[in-house]
Length: 229
Image (tube, rainbow, N blue to C red):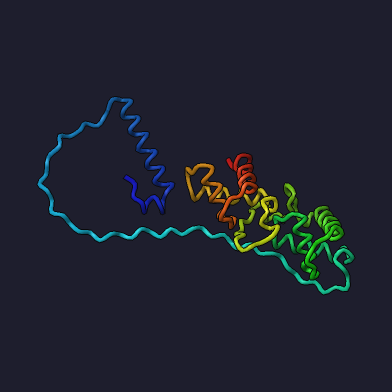
């Protein structure tokens, strides 16, 4: 017998208890020690008792920290693509430290926004790439599968709720596989024995998505198949 409250609060322990019970039953059957059914004894009908319904424990859905965009306003007489490279390197490093894992396109958009610009054109993307490469060469930041991040983020990738985000940040290609794998591992820990499709939906909710579009499903499936054992 497994009580619903035990299943909710101690699911892994109950799974282990159930597995042990099954193993004991198999061993007993193998030895021929099957349980003997006792003759049924009819008892006098008991008086009906009225019990108050017990409230079920409230299910608290795990909530990840909200995604936070890096924004460090810059007062400069220069356009972003004309700013000194040292200034762009410092700005790019702060953006990566705040928002990594993040790809170069998003870093360029953040640099443009820091300078008060709405878009990141080719020239801004070019100087952003140069700044990021310079930071990599100095080992000030790390790089993994197209995304820039710190060593700390590499060791413990953040999982962030994007439910309040808009634009390119919501694209499946803008989410690193490191973060996706971290979300899938949390989903697996919270839903032991769940099917792959259920894990994908749970991970998508952790990332702040109410619906799993084809691009996001494909990326989550890739991570689940390739990286999450």
